Image 1 (cartoon, rainbow, N blue to C red):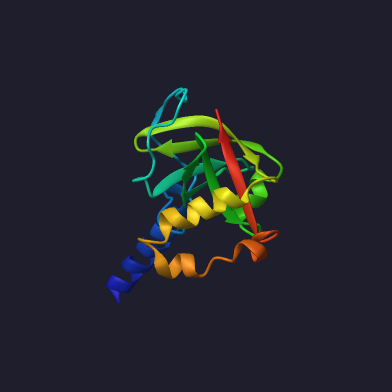
Image 2 (cartoon, rainbow, N blue to C red):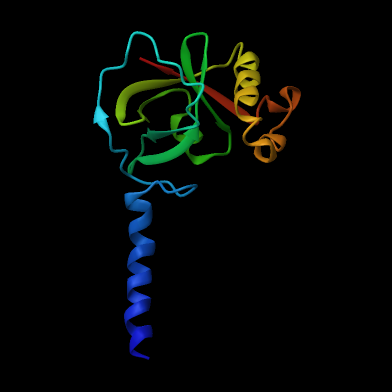
Length: 154
């Protein structure tokens, strides 16, 4: 009985701290970490980078772990239009991106025209290593209205 009295409060405390310390997997967090760095004039090759952390604005900021794609010299992120982080960015917002150990202050701008090649490049990048996940993505024809594409501007 003593173990239960100790274990339950410890588990409750951990459940409360994980989202604050996170992000961990699909659970968003509040802190992005990393070293604040000026964005480079050109991004280095991100073809081997699977995940970044993205901090989006809000009363309490939200840090999510997401995929990133470089297309035509710019970095882009993609999300479902019903996703909380996508809704927070809306028609554009300042964000922070952590790539490796460096954190960059950027602006996320929605790509409303010409987003199809970006989505195709995104799928091509992630399909080999994550075929089950990518198989659940909508087709290009279905993606309009379901998928939001954002360019991360310096």
